[in-house]
Length: 454
Image (cartoon, rainbow, N blue to C red; front, side, top):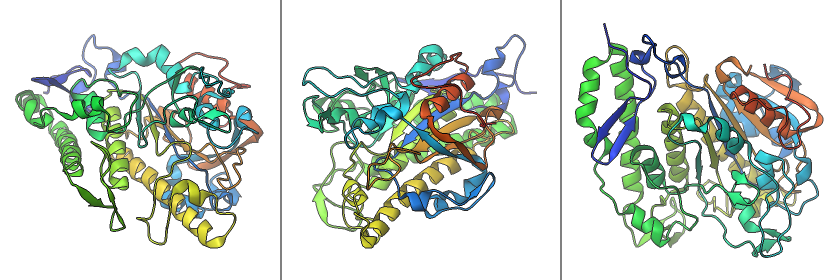
């Protein structure tokens, strides 16, 4: 008979501590806290800039009987795992110039102020931070912010009167304080396993980042090997399989991070034109950068290092060059303004579909992680979407959104949910707060919890 262990058991080694996934030997023992003997509920927000093609996102049909559109095609295998949300919007983002003021409003509903060159005002606290304020102490990392683009700095560098800095963050501790996201995979990984410092408000090639990357490159698995061997001796046969899966996932991420950062004077952008190599710690391949960050996000959830995370595929006007996709020539933001010219519309569609492919990759990872008869996806709520419905026209009504997972029974996925027209997105945020155990009757401009999620 195996001996139960605490959900907070760590494998330790010099300068490292390795949290564990949910295991059978974490079944409730006498006097053990039930909350730590079962998989926790997680929450995540995955943001995509530059909107969508509305005709390629919005389907025909209702309820469970709706058609899969071109943008949703990569997610077809997960149709029963998400709710397609419609008619949600942020009224405070309407009529505001371009992209910049819409980004902070996505998770707060706040009214972003124009810059006077001195003060920064995003209009509110984001829902992830509002939840973390109440339950964040339950995990080593109250929240985990990840992204791809280095933040735009300077509040006087404005677009349409709005600081471009606003477009770099979806997570805000308060109206004046963005929560800095980590964009370097190795440093994000270190925050989980090596007690790494919080990300610095700087570009990836800053001296602070370069210094952080000068570290012992011994595998975390080698550092904690002695403790890991002892644990295997206590584990059930099923847990040994789970541990092998977990250790292999960690090793896979470590190997890929090392390969992605090999020094090169020049590099080739996935077979396209040669360009200067990215900043220190940034993978040469954009897709590998994204997938490494998503895999690290999975590790953070899997080990209960955090229960709340955000990921930004890009900032407000992401200029990421997607020429690595067949038939695409140029940057995301530039192509999003296709002027209804069909050749550019086709390229725009390919870029959006690439993003939904990455979401499918993420959902596949969490769906295949068993947590005692349920999956990590079953025990989570993941919101994916953008702050624009039509990237070409900057239309911010009826936002493109999908909510994946079952939330431990708090959600009923597999259908299209049409809220009444112009329903505040903050109604959804209020519902997510409640489902995460935070008692609240109001958030942002909410008018009440979003109906129909169950």
